[in-house]
Image 1 (cartoon, helix red, strand yellow):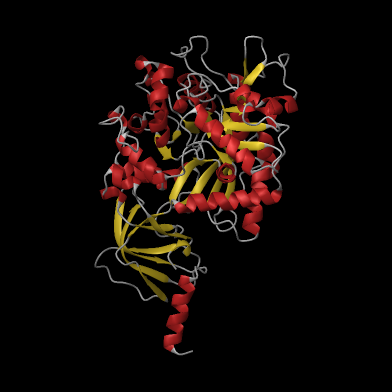
Image 2: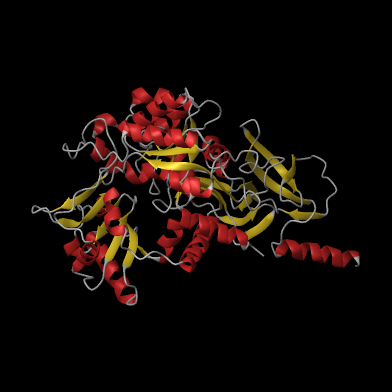
Length: 550
């Protein structure tokens, strides 16, 4: 073949996003990554091999090697693919395919949207959805089944709260589940009742299972569609890898089907929803990395408490706006330690959901006790770690504990946190900088679909403690902000470390996967407002372009 045709074939191969072949130089870029020393590294050229792994990172003026293919970066900003350290992958997809109430601003607004959705989907036997938030509505109480009955009475309606810790049903859903005034609250759950003891419509934490068990399960083809949609949502914001929290067998099977057929684009670090799932899927030890470092199950996600919004987060003192409750413990101290120990003895990582200060103190105590028996590189994770007693923050720096935190929770929950805790208990609320100063480690994520899977909005919140409207002026407890560099690390290198993926992906350094983005601006040189407006121009995973310009 003549040289001109060879060149044309090379260009065509890149344009079609085929797997990388031989060595490729991406030159003329404004590259930014966290280096092997943990500091920001800037570069202008990157070489990756036929396996999609970085082989060289080139500084300005450094001699370019002889390669098979060269791609002009056109002076654009290149950063590593973003890693979201806490999502629920399949829920992202299903949320995009069912009724979404996250944009509703009042009960009336939500009811109108529910009615319209039901009328537009007469063939659906159940109306399913998520995203409602009575705090955002200014309702001052939970919504009721009677209010849902007024707009949809002919079939069950079952709608998850924005945080996933409460669900709202109509009378048809409650009847289908056989829940009555005689039904007892399950351990770790609560049925909201009226004065006569009858279910009023909202089920909190483990009480949701009373109705969940009669909801028709999705078909395999529904799950495949939801995964495809979730990947679209994540890639649109430049998220190339995630930690999937609470992975059940059906979700793992969906990931495997996608991997077997070449449809799994993102990288998934899966954390099982139970010990049974862990043993069924992984067996006696964490699975290996599958599909070219795209899938692994290496740990378990445990739930110790609920969420602030439904007053399920476990607090040391009563809620400021409801003195009758401290929250809902979902595990006893003994159960927590037994489950963590069972996972640790087989080398699995534990990631414990803890939001309230009492829950965080309990997890820290369990880690300290178990670390005496289970030595080595355990990387104990606390998911959310939203409210920590200042007296306990120093403990975060011990035993290599990782705080897996979601910056957008701080901006979304600010007013609610003030109401739930009162002004005297906010010093340890979303304490990002304090965790780092204590020697702890941060991994940043979104908890999508609870919050949007948007690392740029998360990064902006992390460095400013303000929301999209710039409120509150000067930031909410601004002493807890982190630097731009720390925020970038939280969404890349440190998020990879939190899932035992360092050395595989998360940085643009030799030996790691060539997962990178082209952006329209440098997030380390932009204001919080401009970071929120970052546009992802192209997404490359393992040296192959999966999204962007042809």
